[in-house]
Amino acid sequence: MIRIVRGNEPASLMPVRDAQLSILRTLGHAPNSRDIEGYRVVADGLWRAQHYKCCYCERKIMKAYHDVEHYRPKASADRRPGSLLTHGYWWLAFTWNNLLFACPSCNRSGKNDRFPLDHGSIPIMGEELPPGGEIPLLLDPGSSINPVEHIQFVLKSVGPKGSPKHWWAQPRNRSRFGHTTIDVCALNCDELRELRSDYFETTIAPKVKALNEALATAQRELIQREYDRALELFNPRLPNVAFAYDALCSSIPSAKLKYAIQMRWPLPKQVGL
Ligand SMILES: [Zn+2]
Image 1 (cartoon, helix red, strand yellow):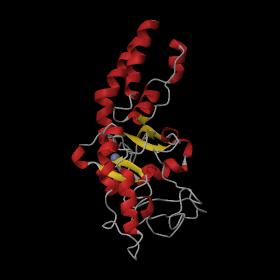
Image 2: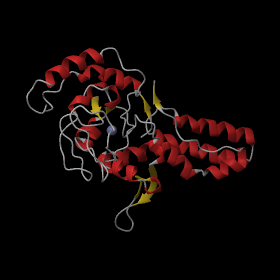
Image 3: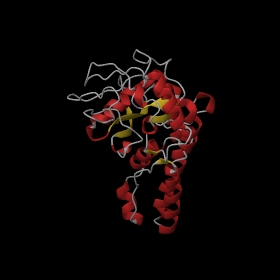
Image 4: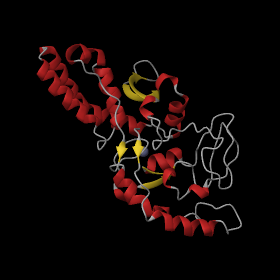
């Protein structure tokens, strides 16, 4: 997961918001997911702005499967452990800062309506604007917080002795936000671990090999060239940018680069407009 900058709200959203909220306000009951419609008007724009990547797992998704993700769930919300209240944030269902593009796996089978709040949080009600008294434990890729500082990918064996090694997501520096986000988005599911292994072998490992060979020559220009090529993995248009950062850091420590060319691995930049 890397930061997402959405850019300005598209002009198509405001008329939908105005029309739909006026309907929802007169329903006479708490809106359910079938009552809340029209927000998909921004689906294509979000999909393109995020370079076709899921906001949570950074895999590329076909247009036919793109979902509009509500960071604060629209119809009902599981806020445990911070609150047992379950009302949805229906009034934010058409709010640009609450909308993201997510893959079906993260949105429907992973996150769904989970929106964990920290202990001591006071959920916003009615039509209050966030954050109010809420302390969300789920990282918001659309916020100013860099998710890379909270989630780390580590190659390790988990389970019985002799289990094969995989690239696991784990909280960086014991981040509670990283811990919760990994759990809510199921970033360690079998499928994502397999995709990360494949991406490492096919895309990252060849760049690591070339840079290691350049380092062995001690030729500065050669090292710089292969370093620049490895940095291409941080292009926000590519999948798995956050993973690539940790895979490179653990394969070739920044200290080695600093010694050779006075460079290090920079934190990946944001994706978006
Ligand atoms: Zn995803």
